[in-house]
Length: 157
Image 1 (tube, one colour):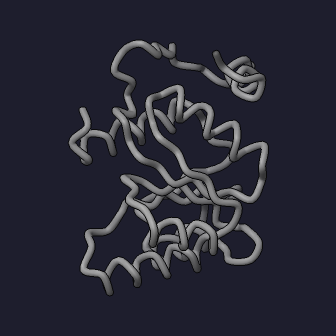
Image 2 (spheres, helix red, strand yellow):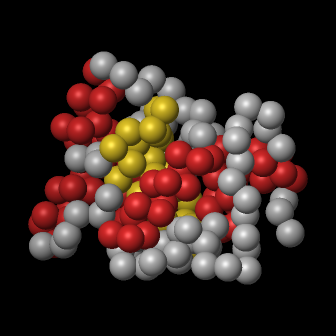
């Protein structure tokens, strides 16, 4: 049963929400996702949605925590806010890419989440190793498209 946070997001009038079919093969196809955002409400809401779409999700409240989780786990996809305390998402992504290279690992797709998806943020994100950038607020249909795309890449669909 969806939590009240998910219900608020799903009932949002500005969104065109896809139908969730929990008993079917969800579009996310079992992706293991690391989601980093300093806003607890956003973290919990997106985590709940990702779970409804068939993902397993670990969360982090800052870039340092995300980096540590990345080093100690396996993820098919990282979704990360770029403006967080302790360590921002850009620094964290750069460190993740450096660590993957040192370990001889394939790059994990990293998607930036930002309130300013234009100009300098895009350049900084791409230079740090992000694969793409999403503007906040995140539109659910856009998130589902990315999950579907990366599920295919991960061989989950």
